[in-house]
Image 1 (cartoon, rainbow, N blue to C red):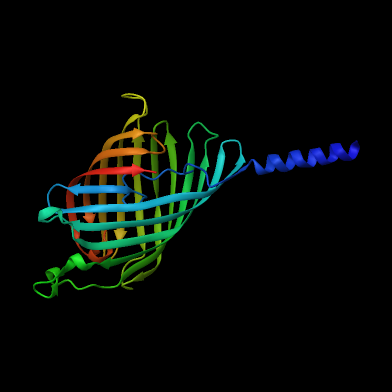
Image 2 (cartoon, rainbow, N blue to C red):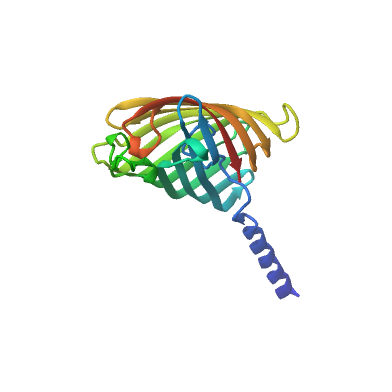
Length: 274
């Protein structure tokens, strides 16, 4: 009988230890930062002041959650994005001008044990940028605007700590680029911002939201980038759903082939959160 009790105690401890682990959970430990363009998105951005649009196809997936103690969760996951620049033409044609690829891994930490929850997300990622056939002017046998394809890629570490005050989340951090082509570009990006979701303000599963993201980016020189978003999400405010939003952006072009171009636009967007 003593041996049986001993085995049962060991099994109970093992099951309890296993319960701290969640393999391929259904949600993200650290939710994407709303106004930051370098986040998982699946949808379109329609610019209002130029004949272009962006198609985003990407996802972040947490592979492991580990609950180290009550209300404290660590996570490990993967990121895989594309964000694509298209032009609008007649007959419902949308030539693809440029596309950027991101893939990497991330580690998250979330502590809900205090009055003001806090955490951090660390990402190790690679980005590469490419012109596509829609950038080629076939009749004139040249690349559009005389801008030929060029090598642009970077590998970086991003660290974004955050703290929550009710429905408001405030964050700030640093991206360190440890390898970049062209090699003369800078290595640091400073970042700060906030996002705000107000669940149940209008009705169940209809959530107004807003966000602002600021980047102080060192490429050939330091430049400020501003991204402002506001909209409504239908579905789970911190999970699956569809978002309709307005965006204003000012700063460096987000596409690597245009890294030394500046742009300013207003746009309407739609995003599907998986």
